[in-house]
Image 1 (cartoon, rainbow, N blue to C red):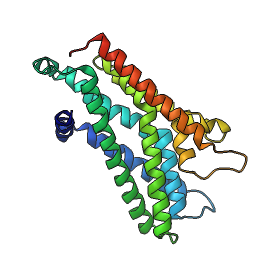
Image 2: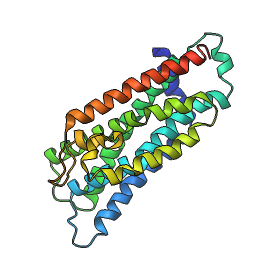
Image 3: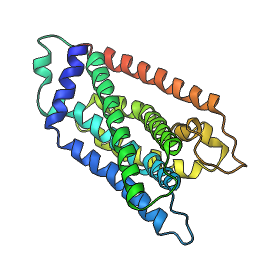
Image 4: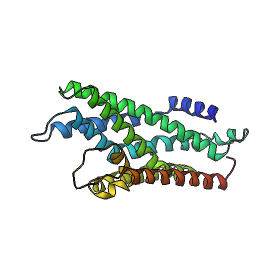
Length: 243
């Protein structure tokens, strides 16, 4: 399994789709800057910028970006005809998909570091005065939690679309609307139960007093998604045990 994970990491060096993911994340941050500075009477602050980045990340950019990058990696096994070579080993479908999911989370960590650093640098550039160790720690923590929760939320999509060539494209479209719908639920108490907004709850994202965060519910939702994803992996593996 460790060799598979190392191999998958090496594969990403030649995948141009990674650059598309970087552009997507960068655009999310730039959009947050324009949203913050372009609003009348708005206070330009590091906390406000970070919250804007988090909002754009979970609702517009992260869901489809994660599915696009990981789904593309899986799809390359079909388009490059590498499955025939894997038959020699043989490697079970569940091990291959799991290795790609683990590597995918490694990319999530890289995305989190990239987002956190770029957000901080832009905040320094535009002259935010509330930058200190405490505000940086809060921003970094919130970005990490939201990124992780978004990745867990899209895992079923990644696994379901892994069964056939080019199916991941439909998963990308679905993931976009999946995240977009979170915009309408984030201001309601359903924020605790909607998978894509669980990160807001667990990171204690700024919210109105009439919205009650219940972290235990959100954690329960994420656990259910992880269990469901594992069941999907078993089903996918049973259909074709050896690739």
